[in-house]
Amino acid sequence: MRRSLVIVGAGPRGTGILERIGANAPSLYGDAGLDIHLVDPYPPGGGRIWRHDQSPLLWMNSQAQDVTMFTDETVEVTGPVLPGPSLDEWSGLDGRTFASRREQSRYMGWVYERAVAGLPRDAVVRHHRRRAVRLAGERTGRQEVWLEGVDAPLVADAVLLTQGHLDAELDDEQAGLARYAERSGLVHLPPDFTADADLSRLAPGEPVLVRGFGLAFVDLMVLLTEGRGGRYEGETYLPSGREPVLYVGSRRGVPYHSKIGYDWTGERPPLPRYLGPAEIDELLARPEGYDFRRDVWPLVEKELGFAHYHRLFTAHPERTRAAWTDFDEKYAACPPGSPELDALVASAVPDPADRLDLTALDHPLSGVRHTSYEALQDGLRGYITDDLTRRHDPGHSPDLAVFLGLLSVYGQLMRLGDVGEWWHGFFSYLASGPPGPRLRQLLALSRAGVVRFLGADVRVTAEDGVFRAQSPTLPGQVTEARALVEARLPQPTLARTRDPLLRALHAEGVAVTAAGLLAVDPADGRVLDRAGVPHPRRFALGPHTDARGAGAFTRPRTNSPSFRQNDATARAVLDLLRTI
Image: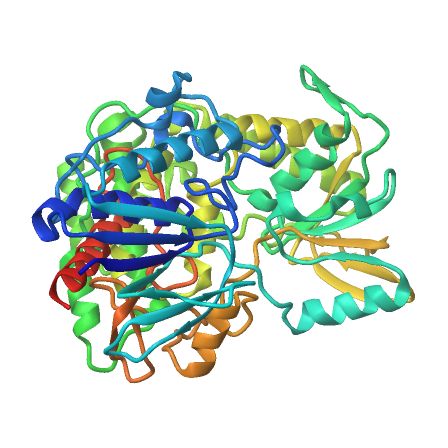
């Protein structure tokens, strides 16, 4: 009998699963008939986020050499490793290039075709360019996936949900601002994938408040400047006259840290050291559970500190006062986050600029107060300039070691499931910031007066027919505008998602984490019910789950957690299809 699998979501995650099904099928499934239905209104491979149909001005946030969809010898998978080209190898681009999203879309389309070609001989793939709206079926029987505008469901032996980034209903604060905007004739653009937002509502020359200083802001900045005909000449921006004026602020009040602009040389820190499989096993075994801030974060701090100081002592010993072996032994003996650890670092590392202070990194404007609007602008331009200089200077290579530490930590924390939104934001702020050229453009836009900085802990209110923004970084300053943009992606919670299938599952009683994510079995991605029992035929992976991973594609040779997830889930699906 032919078996059938429905994959809802045909972007990078669904494509990665497809590649792993092909890799594992010879040993687990053979040449038995298999029908695979991909359900996604967007093209397979790139999906919504990486589709070709978006502005050619939008770049990837990773260098071409740091993007792959293929396993290598570092990836710890049960199935076979099947190497393939990274983006730069496939495209012929210089590895340091930040490719356009259209180029990534072409790469993903090719990866998808290769994945299909690698499936068993008697497998058939059908792409349904529609939304899935409902999932039904008894736990022990075949499943029904209902599609928008189609009378009969797809009938499947197994279903995998890989929808990726989801639209969401507004939270209470956003809904209140949206209602006020509608009553008062204002413009409120809620969290969204920036390429899909209706930016035509932002009028030339008009002030626009922007809340959010991460990657969504960078896209917004590009589309409202170069996207409206402006151009750069060296370090100068020449406006077209069609740009609005962007007043941007956030919790930290600064953009994400620049991508590092140099390569690693020499010895790598031996990671993991203080947060590895044994520590995760111990946390998971605690009957009373664990608290992230109390139990996990101190281990994260010590792990990142180890990466930082290993690099400082081995690559820049002239900036230390001890031998690495002595420091390493004493560092190991100090409890995480303890005064003893602080004293050890202070005695061995004389320059405070060479010490790792994660709290200061997370609160760069803490205690900073400016007395004038221009002083704030100058201060932020100085901060961004210093960040660009540091992130492109190999003399500060401990920063790159911390980046490697962050990747290691992320891979370990995935086993804990939902550790809350703060960690993911902190990781992105340090490890997933914009390319250096984008921050140089931001500086040019600031000097041209097209972008203006608000500061940290920005508070937005709606009153007297306008939006108002205030920040303690510039006490007493109130900025008014008739437009507000929430420059960030929607939070992928099941309670607020606009995905009708996931909303229905939430109502029916699937397990949801404290942060509102779909709970799945960490071993294979099976969807859990509220009693913690895995569904035998339903699987899910991606940002709407607590098996979100660090991204559907990743750097080569980093033992990608996402690839490990894909392999485990593909093998579980094939085991199921073979035995039912």
